[in-house]
Length: 212
Image 1: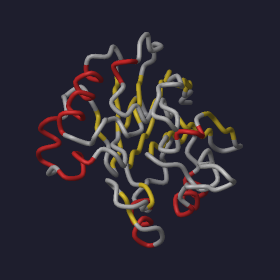
Image 2: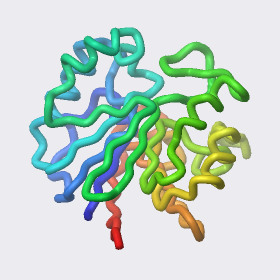
Image 3: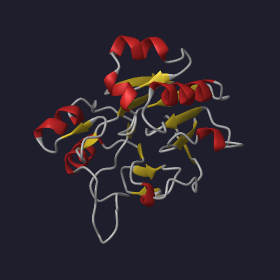
């Protein structure tokens, strides 16, 4: 199956034109401009009209609506042809996909959790048989460079990745670290569309998943 992934569009999704064909499109959060219901609904309406068989997304630290609204209300307003993951998973043609919006605390953004035991509770939920992991933020030391050799990724998440060994890990959050990193077990993809100035500079990234 062919996958297309993107992240951190920050309300600029309608600028994107001629997205490549794929079987599945995945958005890894920070989809809204200001975190409002209106901004989040605009994104979901846009995504729901795209011509992909499967459309999956998670929220990010800017997407306050998805954390502040009730679970019942979010379920009600998400279009039926979209899959919204929040510490939850979906199986598509035998491929196990898990998504989480959680990131380590930085000031007081949406879905922020304290490092250590608090955030680890979320990572413990990731099933051992996860083929594609989608989180808003990166693991520590992997496509998470914020300058001057500082890294903003999550060490607790990295520890669980060594246990799970997903074939692909998709995220964003750190705009300046867009790109891919191949390791023996996992291909890491930072799919941030905007740069550090919140300008649309990057393209959606593709990969093919061969399910034997």
